[in-house]
Length: 549
Image (cartoon, rainbow, N blue to C red; front, side, top):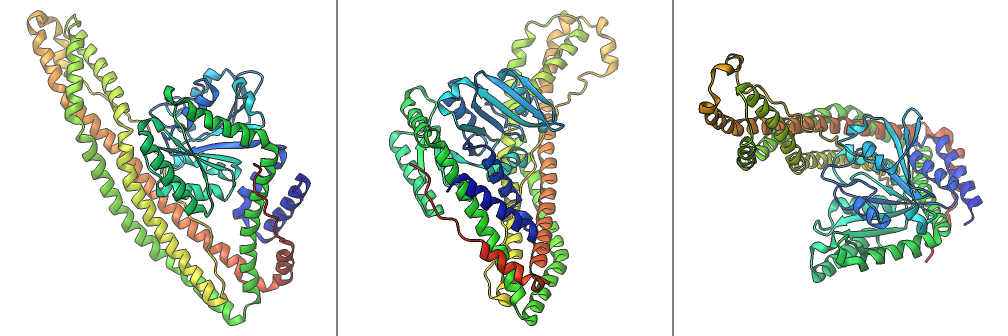
């Protein structure tokens, strides 16, 4: 398939979608347009859940720690890396401003701590590196934690899915291939045939265990897609360099070495997927146009009934969410307060060591203690906060699954109405609820002594009473730890509540939009029968050509 033919076919598909209002395919169309402009450059996107080892993999490939790694996830940004004559960072902001910066400035724009919730309004981040010279023709794309339940870490990566060229789906060896991984794999396969499952952190298991995990992963992937998928183990451990070299050779030989042919094959794959979806929508519209008045009337009645039922669905969802909110608050409180004894004990030992060097009157020591306590608690809360993610994920995933089942039931009713009225099987769009992420913990420390005691510091003999006040400082620790943990638990619970409400909005909006789309396609479509037949006749299938290699 030549590039000219691809562009011609893309233009025809775009015209058809515009003519019949099939806006759901706009992201895929824009991705194909970008590929035709890139003249054979392949975006190799590294996907996977938060902490799957994506940034570590790219750093290892580069031979330098250019991408930040750490405990906290990246912001909702995507970083693109490609070969360049010098190591440089290009940051483009939402207002169009561009800045050329040293690579060392990258964490200031893509880490949660330096740019929380993308407060700096960054649109894109592109890094050029001389180390990528062997991979000329490729652009590596480091995504936030796709596959995590949190929208703040996943939405930008999800938006990138239509633009995927080659895909490396990272799966940690200590987290077996999950339903989320399978769902992500199926999503990716809609946009590209070039997929490698990268089983990261391979050093955490024995050679025998690794072989079993690779076999299991390959079997699951092949079952999901109906075709074999390449699975490669990976580790940054010094003793496992042969694994890194195998992945490197695959990228060099299979992808970089044939990037122009691969780009054409990927573009054809994307166009076939768009064409298939477009055909499904147009077929539905034509079947409705050709149906009898009674069939159209039955379908119209079913759609009106479902629109009226949305109010009842809203009430059902409200009861579900209130129950989940209560459970989320209870679970987060139980989780964080269970950490109190261990944290208080560790901080007590730390404080005992530090107080040995404290001198001065009560005012000085009180101020020293409050500064110490605020810093220690802030650091401690930041360390334990990510553990709340696992607790909240359980609650949010329950809500996500419940709402997706509810939406699917709604779609199944619509599909059944279409089947009864038109004799046509129609699946509809897939609803994927995304969940907002929590903010950083906000630690506040109150006054330790009241004002009257503090004003009398000059009357107190610290040589005699110093040990007494030190014991008082130590006794305060468990209570201060408990207050901070309770505050942190409340923050997670509040964000969880907001996220649950956001899920409700997404679900109801999706159902309204799906209903409006079906009404637009099927009601009154008899006036467009000739145009629909002509459009379907022009949707000739593209020849299927496997990727090179």
